[in-house]
Length: 398
View 1 (cartoon, one colour):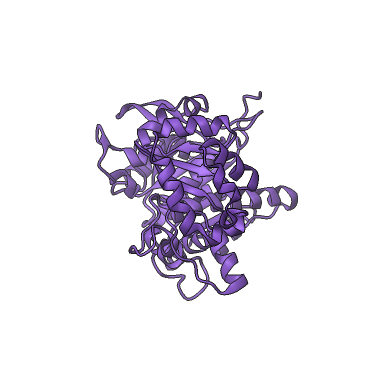
View 2 (view 1 turned 45 degrees about the horizontal axis):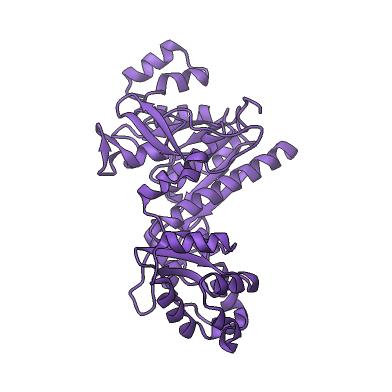
């Protein structure tokens, strides 16, 4: 195993804040990219004030999203501040921002301008609706994107009001798609020497996750509706109440269906023509579901998980967050890590979800205190101590 991080040597100038952009740059930082987070003078990233909870005054949300990064305070409303930003951009590999199109144009940091400063830069825009189209100038938020992408129309249970996905899925998906786009563009740059514009939006990312629903609509014009925890094309593949909680059953093919029926002592279902194949089970799911509910309600979750796992049927309990992190498998996979923060003290963070065999990513440093790396960042881009001191006096950096 190498000690080198896979993205070591890549410098990212990160102008983004809140969630989608910081989630993107967090993933890059976990893999070794040098992410310099440019924050505004009046309090920095808005997420620093998200809460409760706070740990010794530090936002738990900010601490989770901004590990492995450096924080620099720069006044982008001043001409000197923009000049500093441009001098850094000239030497950087990647730029990430979530400014609105009109704002970034007025600042002189549009892709057309930046690409003249640094033709090799990978320039990533993260926004609600993208940089083209009639909605390009609109503000975008996760909730709005979930609604307009169709996600809220298919989430939740039948005959209930529209419900958003419990996590900010449009924001998080956009961060992941942006990171994928950045790495794809960077690989292309290694081949050609040319950078390019990566345009990621919350709306597009939300739409991209309606795979089965869009496939059905394209094929039949049928409009999908909420199904609770049930699958749109497979049965039984959903959650069922047990005597003391809930269990997920994934009888996703005929072999699993047959093993499940035998394991739960419902062999008579195997000779029932209504349930003879997955297609028949989907047609008759309203008859099948009550049978399953009645059966699983007779014993505890642990009882059913035990017998179904022994029978080779995909299954699992439905955890609350505390149960997630007490699970021995989750512990073995290092999905909870400890860090020491200079203000918050000992904190926990989510582990790196992708494991690389030779150059694994890691959680090395906690989220930065606001402006903690301003001098270090400027020095790394060639500014002298005297120049940094003068910039402080001029209140361009803090």
